[in-house]
Image (cartoon, rainbow, N blue to C red; front, side, top):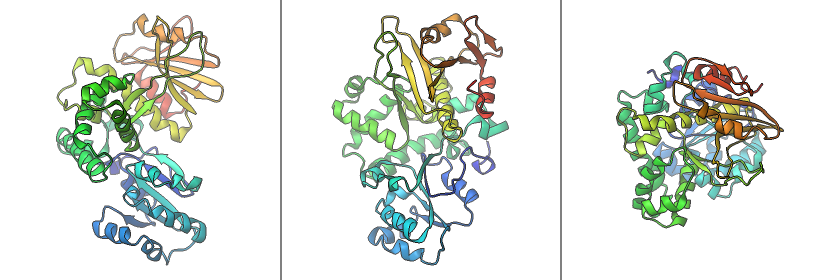
Length: 387
């Protein structure tokens, strides 16, 4: 697998200032070097520069004093000195400078009360690599085993790179940034949270298994989200005959990370595949979703009655809905249709899709489409997922 330098990313460059947030090693700095080669670069991982600006944030404006209106500045690892956003705000207003603000955590940015520059900068995300970006290098088995974070898959030993990645996350993001006072509790929590990948969150169970209070676990989940390691997918809340469940599901941003926090990086076990494949499809929906305006809301649907029917993903765009069920088997079975048939009466439902690892596209008499993975990937890449 080559370096991420060779991959053309889905992320496009806006004309105005923007935040670009994503986990470490996802390729933000590489992307900025390609798309903003003329920009003045300020890297807060440079310890000397970091300490100078931490002691005197006003120095930042002096360093940029020679720039003209419309010039670009790339500020990397912006979360290390959130106070600099006050200077950024002032320089956008007074000098008309444009900023690319790269970060691997939104936690301190939000905590600083900056409200992300009050709309003066767009908020964009960068995700692990997708098949559309990887092209001929895409390998599903590798994506499910080691994930697709560029830093990891370009390493000589992806397994060792993932192990180091989690240790670095605990050391740099959690301990160094003092995101929690109980590092031991957070370290116990991580592998248990890995087991909840694609599952409905049971906070009480998580707290019990990690040996920490429920309120602490809520805080830990917030840390995972703010450091962009995981997301909570809400349940669809509109009424459909009966009251739906409201507990969210937990999705790690990358299959490799979900396995690494559990310390399970051997060959894929059969029982892992379903969750990892579903989580990977979620990652693709998010990665394509922002740039292609694929949806306005993304949720999962659950009937909430005794039938316990579910649909993995429900996309909303305007008044229209699109339902997707994900199956990791190579054979289509009628069981895969139960949730999609349960949601059939939803207002504005324009398409129901099963994505599976077989090779034959099918369509049922009641209009459910059964798509091989290649078909789904093509629809994402060509922006034809919606009918």
